[in-house]
Length: 90
Image (cartoon, rainbow, N blue to C red):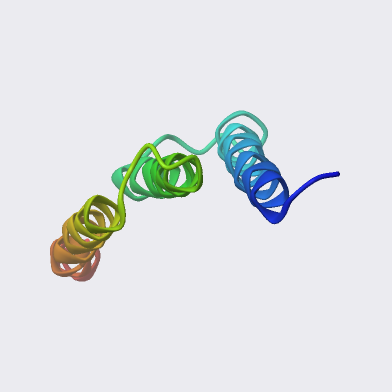
């Protein structure tokens, strides 16, 4: 009746919803602001599942998926040293 692609897409949508609820909880309930790390986390939690969903629907091909995920990981990991320097100086 349902194939594995359907369950994978449901799981990806669930990850998106849970991450959004987590960010909203952190922002509203705990009173913490939206820093650069939270924005990066939210971006990753939305873009990677969206890429996976598009790949399972054959809208994106394997080469495109690899390029997008590689670029995204490179961007996120490249900013780590900047945060370490600002945390030490504070």
